[in-house]
Image (cartoon, one colour):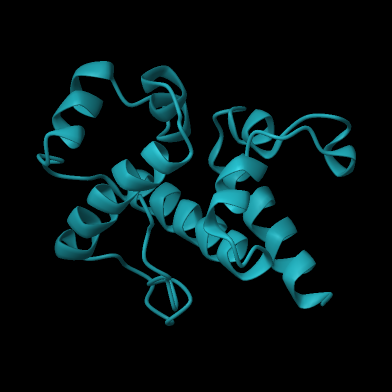
Length: 137
């Protein structure tokens, strides 16, 4: 599976609020992204802020329902991380694999290990790190 390139997330476009329609699209894309990253259901639920396994199962069936603001922000950061990886790695598979690869920059942990801290700030830190790496080129 190959995910589409993301040109900009709603936050980067200067929008401060993600609409319900955008959130539904983000939910579908997040399911596809997590499949590409080969995440377990438990890992997926943690990255989504402690989403229940039952709710995650509904997301995978295409029924995300109403999405709270915090979850919208998490997904926006995840899309920013995906975008950063697509810029750093021309081969999408390398970017997908990088998520789980131990990295000296993270003290031997992988990006996924960092993000699995479960806090919104863990996603923000990874997104900022990737943005900084990309701008250093």
